[in-house]
Length: 320
Image 1 (cartoon, rainbow, N blue to C red):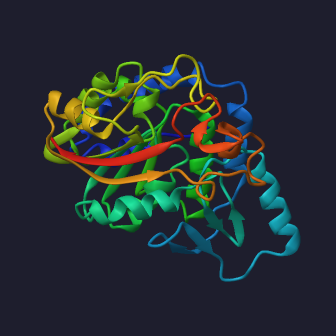
Image 2: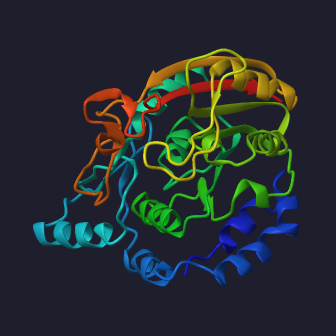
Image 3: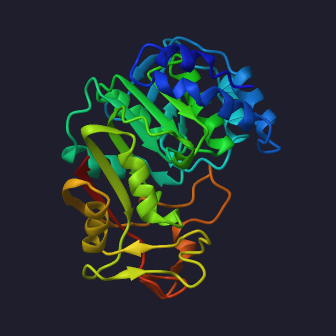
């Protein structure tokens, strides 16, 4: 099973040390109610060796070995990695294997990065981090420490496998909890919440929870689904949105800025809007499930299969 003790030691002498009052007990409780396949997934993490490799995190997430793997070794490693499907956020290039994930998360990163305050030497929280692709890109930008939180056990095991293939790099860590389980630490220089807000039943509570993790004057990077409209326009899907059951509120950019100001954020600005394309989210051999093409009206890709506006995403940056 995955050992969180190195992370406890890592934060013991940092501004995150108050977290140790609650986190170890929370993770012990988490371990008692994990997904039925968690033990199988964690064994894959344990099985894979750490082999010294050349790491590139500046323009991709990549590990290169001095001596390439044999065809048989590539086949075995690919087999183990595919036991952790579906791979949703990526891509990863590890030991000569291309994990072609459903989402080209590098597209989103390229849209977000030019608008960020420099991440060098920052302590960063990535809320809803998935398997951690963006966390590694944050490390590549010089972050001192990146902590991701996501309660999904499969994402944790995917993250830990990638960590092993990246020389067991400890600058990024994934904690399997939700933001609502975190005490207000006010300790992070930058907080990211990308692709989370529309899954929250109470979006203003989520924004307040994000603010409670930031140092005074810290930077929030919020990326979420939006619709066109004015400050009063918010889409509340009747049942599903793009076949997703857990989509509750999709605001206009103006409404979202209003929400952020209501909970106390300052200097709130929208820095990017982009319609999700079939190049950014698509089926690959690393995903058995449906993808964006299956969620859109086959006769009109400007609409979801339910008739709502097709996915459009905005990036908002604000300060606490």
